[in-house]
Image (cartoon, rainbow, N blue to C red):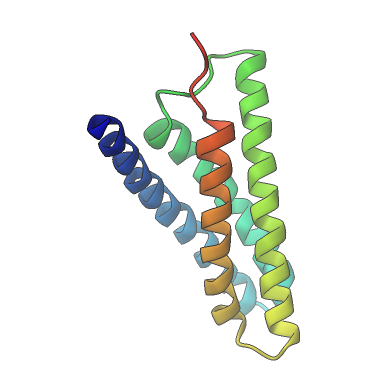
Length: 136
């Protein structure tokens, strides 16, 4: 039992690091889009989408490498579930940033709140649904 707990903790750390990498892509492009005058909600949606791609690459290769489905229909289903989890994260992120901006908050502060909310949501979905261990 302790070994399973330790493995889970290591996986959470790897997921956190993968999320930091994807976040770098997300925030870098978010700030760049804001600097060229794009509205905050739109910039958040585009940058989050770029982060989705980075997160799949990092998650499937470093975090959940042992539960990535083999090629074929199972892998396609897993990718679809991953994108679905990302789209839910995107919806949460866009709503928080858009609402914060509408309320007069600095969009960068709203983005930080959105990052935390999206991280929790996507970790739960990905660890429990997208990359769950398949029955042998």
